[in-house]
Image 1: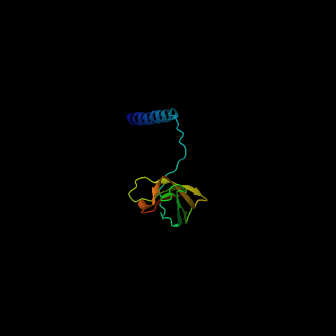
Image 2 (image 1 turned 60 degrees about the vertical axis):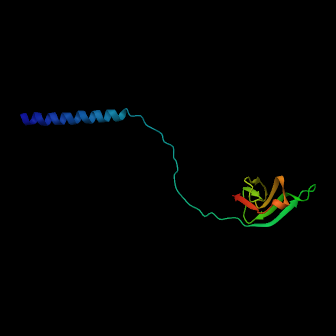
Image 3 (image 1 turned 180 degrees about the vertical axis):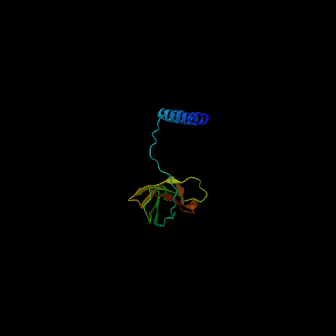
Length: 123
């Protein structure tokens, strides 16, 4: 008889534990998580080829460069340039058709100080 009471007690404990576990699960709040993306990738970074460089002189002071125009071999969305190697700031340039660039130098640059055309371009 003692053996039956022992089994009944174990079965009773298992039934109560299962009921408590199920009841706790029933009261658990649900969360909504939106879909998201994560990843890693790489791509080649290549430079631009600058061609058809032309310097426009200031009409009032022809010893000064007023602007520089050039063409890139691929479309760009942002272009900056400078014509003096020691200059720390680049001039914002305008882009026509993605590849035709005009940089109005402000202030004008004296021809005697112009020693390097440096171009920064991104697409």
